[in-house]
Image: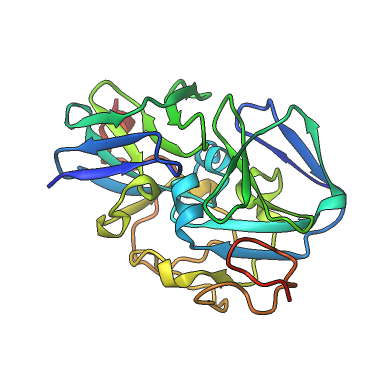
Length: 136
Length: 143
């Protein structure tokens, strides 16, 4: 099933033609500082299944060397692109954000103390060990 | 006590010189779509206590007529600025984000179903009814 999404102002749209491989909440300080939210929810897709369908985002290379896309007009932060093969879409940019199924929390060593969860999901102090770029 | 913060790349910095007067989690669709996170945490400061201390952010005026700041270089979303003088800073941009004390959830009508929280805070379907109503935006009457 296709997954569509984009930024707040609508200048940028994207489509993914396969289901996500995984969805993981991330509590790292970089995600927090870029979105300014308590944590992000990363939905990983195969890069080959993803395409920008309207407009092009701008990129910022973060301190771990990973490109993060955002819309130059409205500031929506849409993707985190850790490898040639995998791309993370932040859940809030998806038109059907409600339909994903997060399976864990990564980087909980830096989770904010006032985030109180009751979702029963595993918490990893650092990266989700099942994501390929954390194994490399 | 001063509250300092800024964007991911460091080009933009700000300072608030008094404690916030409201802290709450927002589940509205506009916050979600701009930050692409499940929800935001707004930390509201009186405008006269807030200043940009390094760089200037870019602004986008959302569909409610409220401007939202972000860094042109790294894309960090930092503030939501309703007319009326307040500056609502998103918690993750604060250097001491761990020190804020959220008191409620707003706009839970659009909360994502997979978000399972256990913080005991009140959940308001729309805005916080106890909030001083000086946030004027389209569709909202000033109290």
